Image (cartoon, rainbow, N blue to C red; front, side, top):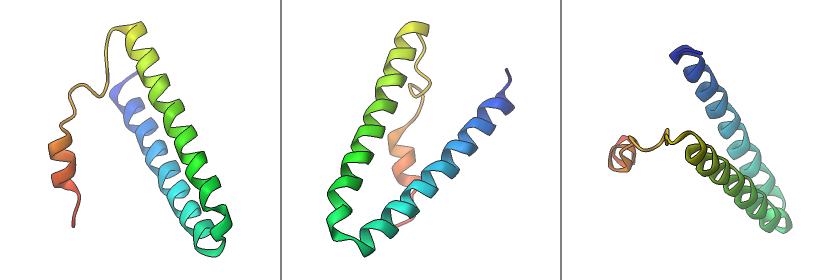
Length: 79
């Protein structure tokens, strides 16, 4: 494994996240009744992701998000 593998995985994650956002917005725009289901799906999948991150971080003793500055993330988002 190399840094290029991490970059490729994160690129796939970004693409999948963008697709999920776009699809969610499209469904919610045309079907108000589906909004709650979309919210539940997002909550479920985000919870699963955070749980996996926490579990693996504890197993390995390394948190890949530990060095991330949430202030810099917020500043990087154009308003």
